[in-house]
Image (tube, rainbow, N blue to C red; front, side):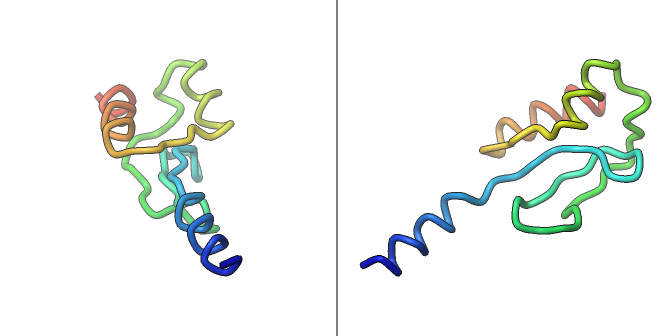
Length: 75
């Protein structure tokens, strides 16, 4: 049973993280050292508060949140 609990925990612990990679907005899976997606939008073009939030990493828990944030940042 303990092994099943660990597997379920591993599955539910994975989330997405929106941050900055080499000056661009990027999206990571929590367990990957490299970004899954690098968007063609320079973070320097964002307001300071948004850049600061991205530098700390923004946890994304679902596709709706991701879509809303990307729309805000990329438009």
